Image (cartoon, rainbow, N blue to C red; front, side, top):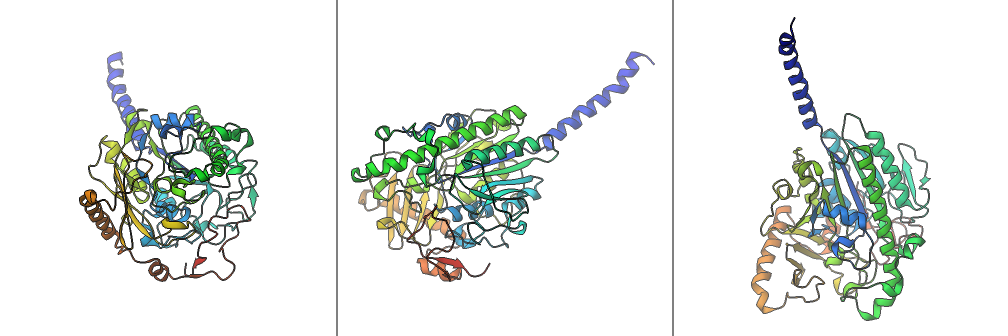
Length: 492
């Protein structure tokens, strides 16, 4: 048999191998890493313009990512955000509008959705969706489809933070500062997944920079001398000195997060999986830190410091490592419809959020888009901002109404610190009317008539907890809601 005959025989085989290899590569879904900070304001990272913080790794990630600069938390507090993320639904649909409630098992969990789409799933860090006590063991049937498991319901004692691993109910403790320990565990998890047939989806849910702020690493707190900290103009002068102490620890926690994210990104590069890994970096809500006179540690407020969050998506396989700023707003229930849309994965029919993937896949913006966020039941903030509200965020404006009518209107482009409320200005009446119509349209879409808080408490069968003023054990580390109504869901 001559050379030409061999070539005729072998050439189709080589073509088939190359073609089949290409198809296999196309069918290989990207890995997903979802990095969730706790209580990080949209304005806190260096790339967002904060003059104090040192976040070089996040700054670089932002340059390579789609940076959604108008992302909001659907309800700026821990459990409601996490429930909306896990279900793709609004708090008015699930009843998850207070901390420490139990997400009903009837809800289709995100881990299950990812597993149904061919992913191996993992979760490390803070959960805050089980509602059976912040130090309680969470059995496998309540983990919403997540397989790898090193999780605490909630623990902000960062230097002695507990977790449960796998199916064991033995309480374990992270070694040292938990942000660093959880990062090491995530690096090991990723390394263990390399070369496996199925892609992985890993959630890393950090507790920082949520208070207590003073427990941040001492070597990082030294990077923020009190005399050098600059607070924004919307913080009253009478609060500045005390708030600098809080801010020092807050920024040190932020820098520790940045160091950890840098290590994660380096691991992805070293393991050769960076190009085929979609990364999200975001937070569940922000923190007021004295802005507008609202006490440090408070959230839930309609103002930007509490409601707006950082939101970055990096996926090099799609457009390389060239990022851009996205002006179109996004809210929590939109996140996984958008990610599934980006990756051409089926979107669960139960999801109420919008698929905004065209913003990335088509490098476009959606004109006049508005997103919804809310507070159903006031607790723990105090003052004029401690009230029920429904709000919309557009690329330019923040608008909120309370039970009495239009309440807040800010031009976030001209007035980023939201120091000039335009809601009562006759010259802005047409704009108020337009935004109010958008708000009611979004409320109509989810069937919310905006009732007083008690209506929702009754609707979801909540009643005072049987023991104590706070329905969980926090070991003194997380006095988050000292004035909150102690409510528990009586049916799970």
